[in-house]
Amino acid sequence: MRILILEDEIPAKKKLVYHLTNFFGDSVVLDSVRSIKEGIESLKNNPEYNLILSDIRLLDGNSFEVFKNTPTLTPIIFCTAYNEHLLEAFQTNGIAYVLKPYQEHELQSALKKFEKLFQPKVVEKSIFNQLQIALDKREENYKKRFAIKKSNGIKLIETSDIGLIQASGDFCKIFDHNGQLHSISRSIGILTKELNPEQFFKINRSQIVGMAYIEKIESYSNNRLALYIKGLKEHVITSSTITKEFRIWLES
Image (tube, rainbow, N blue to C red; front, side, top):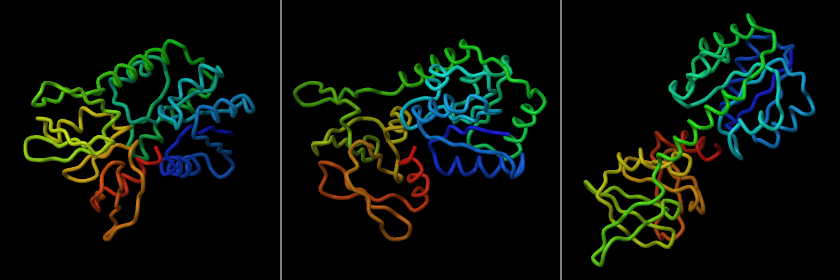
């Protein structure tokens, strides 16, 4: 029994290894990769995998690129954070999925389904196409820029230029990577939903940081981290309850 795991988050990979070993026993051979490039190489070098467990998001893109470049007959179980509406195609095409954060019984249910079917199934390209379209639409829903009212008119601020967002009552202060301050009449809760979670993270109740402009991270007291943002003189601090999740986000 040989299984390939496509998962860029180390804690998630370790969790899969633990559950797969418990389910199939120590004789199972588990290979794991974190990127599209490594996934393609693994499938080219070992085309006879019995099963693939794959996240959608990898370090350098989404896993659909792996299967487009190296077509496989191996059954695939997707372990993903995307909601059920994006995965309806799976339910009618016999491909199992496990929604993160999953419980052990949910993964076991998918593995039992694999054991019942066992015979390799052809993964139709249309399934990947449907998911790719859904994924693209999801990304389009995130803000790419904000229109900021200024005394002399309206200024457009690209989200890719934002280093820090600071809550201030019913509005927020936006600091770009040059340290310039802009005010926007949106609450931090609304902005959290409007920004791409792969690029922005809410580190405490009142601050959101942009990954692209985190220059340095240092340990702080009480299981907190001090973050130094490009263009800002003062560091910002993660809350103790969010530090673990923040560390995982940094590696995703």
